[in-house]
Length: 382
Image 1 (spheres, rainbow, N blue to C red):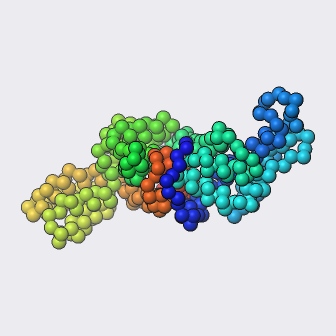
Image 2 (image 1 turned 180 degrees about the vertical axis):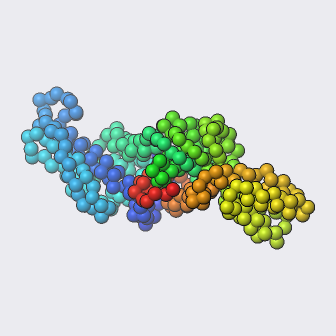
Image 3 (image 1 turned 120 degrees about the vertical axis):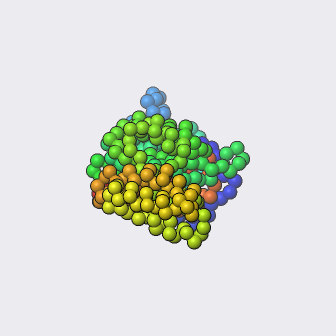
């Protein structure tokens, strides 16, 4: 990827990305410094890998692990060895001395798309000599490979599945477009949350959702007992096509919001919200259905459109009553994904407009990897 931005991002904003929780940055520093050390050994030996030449100055002898304490925690590097001795890569020491500059450059790579010119400058600083664009491309491709491997990792049994989408600004063909970021979060067999997948495309239409959900199934997602989401038409069609036999819970928070569009008077909004909340907070399905019937009759005369909407839509939010009472609060909405979206936007606001879909996917994936790893180390969610 050779995109070169026409603007510069303030260093303090890059620092914010690097400092405020991108725990994957140490791993990327490890990857880049390891690549630089390999290049340095190759130059020291005077031959390409597996090349036979009388000009060879020694023989590669594997790697030795070295753990270094940095401001971002301990990082384990793979230090290349030479059989005859006398070789020690300068890239490691230089990389640690210029840790802040390296970290900021990696943050910028996340935002703007990996620029070979940017990484070439970093690698030259580490190695002390110029490297080719093909060598840079190999090193930077490793960064994206790590994120892609996480997005495509095998899945297993997932009891509860939450689906949602939000939009980020992306530039395409000289125009600023809204790209849909699809996110899937699951609760696994141990009761812990994890981010199952993410996808970015310039549409939230049914084909994008169907491809995304099918990718989850292809990666081994199984055992789903309930899907919670909003009522987006494209998502609904895709969900029925891929997970047609799985019960669906329409997000109660979105139902509350949607209902307000059918309230004829501002003075009635609080009353309607209270009536719907009473239905959702009922102790069992029978009581919820009784309260719904009463509420429909209550508004038949003074808000007939609202009454019809309630009768047709509120039952989609009552599926959760088939599950234990102590689980319902966490199953009935996608509020957990809304908080996830806020965290993504806290990072993406630094960018404003992504230069392409890939740069958007790169940053979002890194954020979700970090959060998902934290979830898996926390206490049981459900």
